[in-house]
Length: 116
Image (tube, rainbow, N blue to C red; front, side):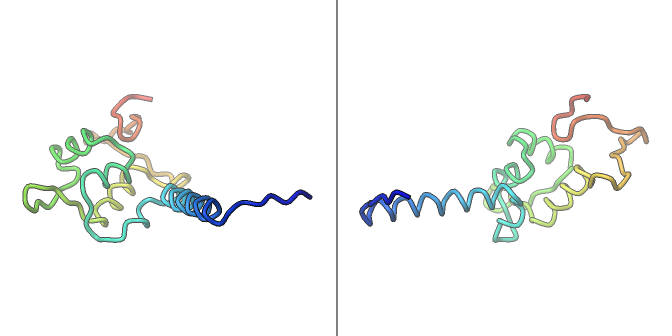
């Protein structure tokens, strides 16, 4: 076994970088639980839902999700985001498929509107 000596400043910098990487990995596991407040911005909601800002505006226009406006900014309640995730991404094996308004099964890829 070989020992490597590094100064304390380099060690602390490396430790800080590892801590940042660990935090980012935790965010990727379950981004909804990372959110500490009950209200989130459009960008935060888009990141959690893994959609673009443009898709968020489409959701708002189609009333898929309704924002609360404060000083001309839109905010979403985290429970509304969780509800949208549950509707959009049914759990595997539960037998549920998304249905369109005419009762047919929806075969589009979630968030894209493109057919599979």
